[in-house]
Each structure stands twice: as structure tokens, then as C-alpha cells.
Length: 351
Ligand code: TXA
Ligand code: MG
Image 1 (tube, rainbow, N blue to C red):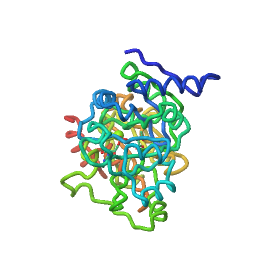
Image 2 (image 1 turned 120 degrees about the vertical axis):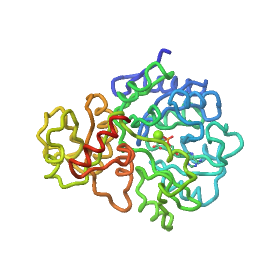
Image 3 (image 1 turned 180 degrees about the vertical axis):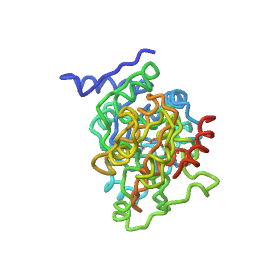
């Protein structure tokens, strides 16, 4: 399939015309990869069940893992979801923004979008290009994160192109995304966080006046948010978290070869390995780590290393999204000394 690729940061004119064409592609049942403020999405007209089914096929996504529907405003969402007055009040305060809200689904939504649930996940993204695409399509756009199922989400136009060239109708490249991790998913009725993400929970609690619940996902047998049970955000290269002291890392990796270290400058500098085996993901702080994380994981896979080691970052009570992604990316595998690492490596190599 020939993919129509446009890099909005490189074109000098015709943006409106191009975006109009992209909207038409969606409207006519095509698939368009586009940027949002969190990660790139792979989108289709929500009302077109065949188009939405294509997304599952292209991503290799399990059919019981529902899609997030993107709209340009609350009015558009009312066409596909039943909203209470409280829902609307909160939506007006948090949108556009990186937060996805679960609402009751109207009958017109194809089952393929909701995975057969009676609810639908919706959000209004805070990204000019995404909003322009939705407006130009004139319909809400169902879009999961742009990545083959299980792999890290695309956070740049380059990632989007590498993953989906020749697999979708069009790709809109527009630089790196602002947050770098996906939206927070919340069930407002029970104030349960179904997925920690880019929207700060304390801020949401301030708006709703209700304390949120953060379930222990490991203990829940039936997944409230179907996507939480699947492997996620993982590079193909085995990745391990290091929980020991920074100055003891070099001892833990003594005599081991061909591995990559991912973390802060200090973390990466603590081992004597070639420069091209280190990925410094921050010099500034936690938000920069989030923004660079998926890019680092995608780069790791290109380095053909035997394994990767990633730093554990200190998390705040209201900001658990980064470590949530790192834990999933490393499949919860953690070491603090050489013995554990070697043991993990034997497991890691049969992965
Ligand atoms: O930032 C984001 O949210 C990105 C951009 C593209 O908007 N999208 C994204 O979509 O991360 P996806 O499909 O990768 O993740 C959607 C999550 C999954 O965990 C899914 O199970 C959950 O939302 N979800 C969707 N519909 C749901 C529903 N009705 N009830 C509970 N969880 C739902
Ligand atoms: Mg995803």
C-alpha cells in the first residue's frame, strides 16, 4: 500500500489543503496516523466499523481492547456518548487535555470500537494538528496509540513512519509530542484511575473535589480497563530496572558485554562502557524523562544489544505514570546486584 506522508514541519504552504485531504481520507474509511499532545495515534472514522476493524489488524491488537475516541469538543462527543451534567462540567475543565474519560456509549458506536462494552473512552486532545484533523473529518476519530501492539508508542513523526509506512493510508508527521506518554484514563463515576498518564491526578482531584482510587492492577482478576492486562510499551531487547546504588552499578555489570544503559546523565556516567551504548534521557528532570522514554526504548532496539538497563526514577504519589511505563517495559524485572542480573539474563534470553 502506498502511504501518503506529510511532514508538517517541512512544508511551507498548503497546510489547510493538506489537512482537508487528510480529513477526507478519514471520512472515506481510510486510516491516518496523526500527532496528539501525548503520543501519536492511528485513527479512523469512529462510525465506520470496517475502518475501525482495520486498526486492530494493522496493530495486531486484541479485539477486546477498546479504542479511545477523539473529538474536537463536548458537543461532538454527545453524538456517540451519553453524558451526565457532572461529566460535562468536568470535561469543560479538563479538556482539551491529556485525560480520557469513560462514558456510556450510544448505540451508534460500532462494537469493534468498544470491544463490546457498554461504555466508551473519549477525549479532546490539546494539539492543533489533531483538532484540525478531527474538524476536517467532521466525525470523531477512534485512535489507539500508534504502535504495533506491545511495542512503545510513537512519539515522533519518524517513529510513526518507521512503524506504519505502507500499512496505512496517510501519516501526518509533526515533530515530537509534548508529553511523550499516553493520557490518564479515568472512570469518573467511581473516580478510579484505569491508567496513570500525562494528566496529573492531584489536579483532577482539585477539579472534582473527590479523591481518586488507584487500583492495584496485579490483584484485579477481571480487568476494568481491558488494555491493562496486555504486554505494553516493551522493547524487543530484554530490559531490566536497576534498584541498587548508582555507584555500585559498575560492579553489578562487571565483565558483562554488549548492554545499553538508559537513565540520567549521572546514572549513565557510572559505568565505563562506550558512549554509543548509553542513552541519557534527561538532563532536566522527570517530565523530560517521560518525553524521551519511548524514543529511548525504540532506539534500544536498534542497537542490537544483548540487554538494556534502566534507572528507577523516584515517583510522586500523584505522578505514577512514568514508573508504570518503565515497569511494564521491563516486564517488572529488577536487579540490584550481579547475581540477580545473571539469573535474569538467562530468563531474558529465552524471551
Ligand atoms: O494518549 C492517549 O490516550 C493515546 C492518544 C493517541 O490519544 N491513545 C492511547 O490509546 O493510548 P490506547 O488504545 O493505546 O489505550 C487506550 C486505553 C486502553 O488501556 C483501553 O483498554 C482503555 O483505554 N479503554 C478504552 N475504552 C475503554 C472503556 N470503555 N473502559 C475502560 N477502558 C477503556
Ligand atoms: Mg497503547
